[in-house]
Image 1: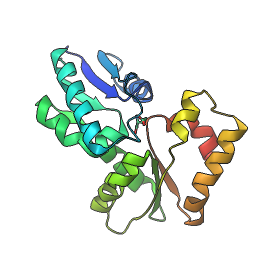
Image 2: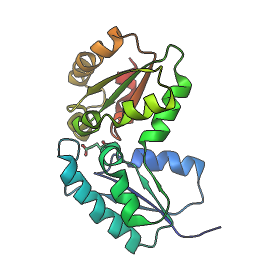
Image 3: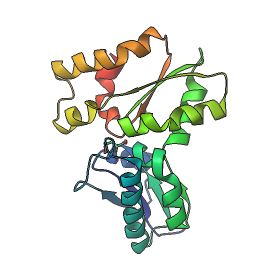
Length: 196
Ligand code: DGL
């Protein structure tokens, strides 16, 4: 077994939701986690800026001698996967393709909703990946920029969060989606209110 650590990074602490799942499946792996709490959020920044940040962090993780890199951040995976691959020269996994594959396998009605940051939704990365997997899929996307600050505030089950979730999700529900991709590291922490 290669004992080197796996590098994981995100724009902040949200990517620990990805680490939690990784450790469930790979309990013997060592992980070096980089959360860019100094420069978060990424979701409202331009692709150019996010690409520069991705380059910095990749160089940092390579200096820690990681054996592979997992980009936990959806926004980075959407707009800068190629940058990380270029500088890493080791295996790199983003979250868009695995998320799209899971959604495509799950849907029965071929109607999928995707929520994410403004950057992720503007990039169309999820809808492009889903259409590549199955061109018959109907994809309905919506940016939910208020979800990240609500999570950071710890308002997971606050009435304001419920109201905002209703507002964001109503148009997707009227499209009769049967599967929703939580395309942002913070959204699993709102799973209860989103599911409701
Ligand atoms: N980590 C980001 C993502 O998954 C969300 C937080 C941010 O805007 O930086 O897209």
